[in-house]
Image (cartoon, rainbow, N blue to C red; front, side, top):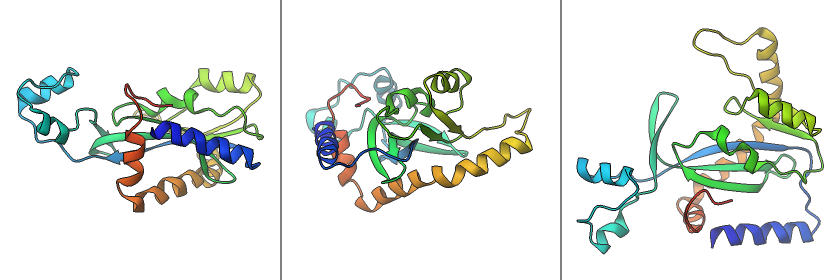
Length: 202
């Protein structure tokens, strides 16, 4: 249901002349879910993708078996991840995919790509650099603006730092979109969560 509503909104925007313009931004945002207090045996069963036999219907309705743990900036998070392709000019979501929190951002990148954008600029943060990806995008005529990241044994150069700073300001517009969802509490998440399984929904 949530996916159908999203697609209908996109069609209405297009019919009113709201085109995706001025480049696109790809990013992901964590969505917290209530931590599940399961017994060790129950947790192992859930990890295997099944529901413990002892859970009756009312208990199953209160349990979230799809959310997973991930770590970001040294902190553990339990829940889901909203991946989105954003129109830079209007700051509208053009494509969305919902996964559990442990899915790496970079895996979803190609599915969020919106080829109908009137600009050929593509922005993303440090979670998405890939030589193969950038080569394919450039060959297809896209101007790639993906921030660089260092490694434990090797940092980034001064040139790469300047590149990251030049990308940071336009890319930050996606944070405005995710930030606007927070005051809505669980309502927006309930709509997305109604997408038919298996996830991700696209």
